[in-house]
Image (cartoon, rainbow, N blue to C red; front, side, top):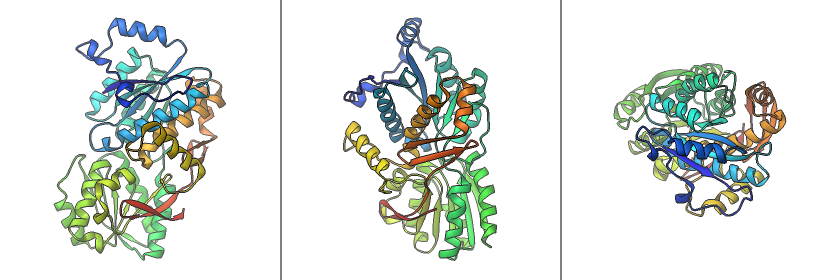
Length: 394
């Protein structure tokens, strides 16, 4: 998938979604831009800031693609209405970061070479980030990574602003141990870097509470037969199942978890859980399920309420539901604006220096980045049908 989204600087009414996307790969059989398209881009792009949004639109994390794309579009429209970034109007191109990794990397190389991207904003798995950062580093292109992740990103030129286990999972695990008396934990996650690294940290947090892990497994992306996993969980008799499955995999697992009766007897704590995934689980299968996030639709914060109002005004009442992972596309663009304005430059060095210590505002409220680590208001919540009931700030 390769589409271009252009927003007028005057911030007028949004075009219908069908008109926002123009497929640029049809001009050549191999998917590259034709010389005519390339010349057109160069002529019109002299005063543009060309941002590549690498967003998962297919595969298990593709469930977040519609909200992520809309959220980024909304931020771009707002920034362009304010005059753009350093006097340059943003031109956002969206590329699919789902599917086979080698195809995503080829897509990135072509986008940098032919579309002459100035920087990349990514909302995709950490497996893609680990591979894609080698390309952005080689081309010296700034790279902002927005979703929840395992933490520890220190690659020059890469700025990660999502929730990490230290601030998301640790206080939640302590709360479940203190309030729900949880001691026995079973860990299940998708088979890639975010769950691998997150579980390493989680095990330390569980030990801090006097609890212990009674089982752990990693599931291939796209797996939808969860009977063997549920059988092992039932045999292990945990108090809590900590779930690090992503996207539709989390929806199908949690739905099966509820349908087999485990939801009534066993607590669940999920790391990448939001309204989008919850809709896929269904109200009947969300019992005893907890999650923590830097964003929930029901926080009641003025910045969040304003964001949701503008989202609905731009995309209509039937727009894809807002969730924490998809909404991070908006956060990424707001972070970009703040960093570029502070740096006074879009070069990698000045931006990276500015981005390591900065305060910016988005739908989450005020986010503080210190030494490259993002801190934001964090909330613990419990699923309540198809909504989340906030329990407490953490």
